[in-house]
Image (cartoon, rainbow, N blue to C red; front, side, top):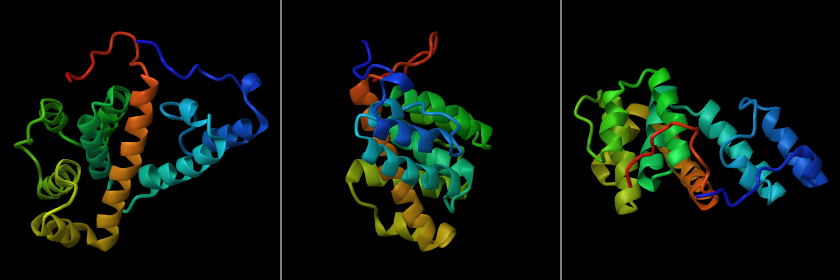
Length: 183
């Protein structure tokens, strides 16, 4: 399958797109990969989304290992191939045991999680699959991370749901030689 949104060059961008693009690449991402090429079709939305994403990815109250766990749960839920590819490595680099994403890839509950990982897994999985969280998942998450942590998990889930949807609509490709997740 081919991408639906042709890669924009700076020369092809409108002034509004260029301004949004500059905001994206000047931040902590250092580039405009993933959903940003497609998002630039709506430069004002792209600018607002990238600022939310900067908080969710780089400034969350959650440790990177747990934030990345939340992101790969979302990527797997949506079978967002590029998102999974990018954030699986980031999760492992942040200290997540590789057995955890391996189980998630197979749509199985990982058996080797620490208490904080299990809380994130249960919260995010319930939120996506049931569209709510149980009192148990909420209380476990709140106990470990506080109310801000609960909201930061919801924010990561929501932001990366949108990113996954954009990538899936775009048919964003995986790098050459990377095996896709099964459907």
